[in-house]
Length: 434
View 1: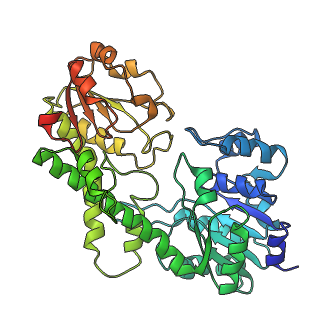
View 2: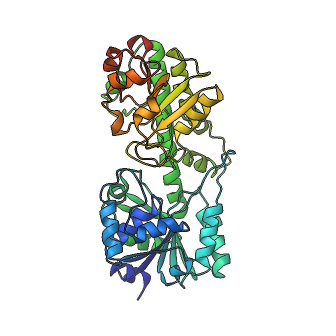
View 3: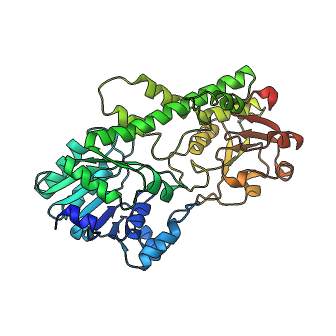
């Protein structure tokens, strides 16, 4: 029976390397679709939690906990830290980190280690799929070479290779995996079609077959595009502040024009994808990409802009205590990778401030809001968690040392804040109206 036939009748065994925000929900959905799945992760505590049918991801992730409990309980998903468990798999899907370092160049140490480890146990004729986001050309050159060295065989003969970059965000992991279209890049048109059949078991939207490099460009290109869009929104917000207008109203009216879609401005861009994917795209060319570099600079500067707003509200940072609401990069999530709050905290501390942070989802920051706010000189909102909407500003004002509120996500009722005696500032809003 061919690989395509085994995928079609669900007798193919699927392996996952990396059981984080991408690998775990994907493994759960393939198992829930009726395929036998084994997941491998080097973090033994994560493996143990999954084996106990416990979701090792905090935050609001609709359906994921119940699906995990169901598939682990039924034996459809097995988890381990032993890479040799992948030896019986027909398809191995890699979901490991591909970080960017300070020089803006990708570091593929984790990916290379995973690829070589998988290659050492890979079954004859198996398909390896990279879901990790990589720079254009990486799969065809680096990944293929690592696999050929590890398997001592040739691509297309000893093994097959694909790239199906993830398109998920925390808080919508299951929904995104089901409903978002996917791009299936294969080492040959036949493998791309095989991947389309595989992902059709869990993806309700289109799965578009293509080549490896096109798939890499689609993922890095779409996130670079979004980064540029966010940067424009952030610069428009700054113009609104200086011009005496409200960014939210300007945005609303601009977006009434057909074909316009100005995004929200905010306190910073975080997460695992958007801060690094533009640099991954840039790493795939020798050309200068000034627009991408400029957008990254604009978005990286937003946490410092929050600090400037604190100062504009009359708070001298030297010796001040700042209470920050939100450590995650995204609302209703525990994902704190590349958190703008980290950049804000570093900026404020470098200027002599003491900073305390609250977050209801991130481990180590779940203490009471009152504990964080008491005696502080300013309240700074960095994340739009639901808990921060409708805050009792009168109660919080009573325990602050100074009633100053700076809103980087436009979740605070500024009129109510002013009525409670607060001096307010907000991104995209002129000081005369705040």
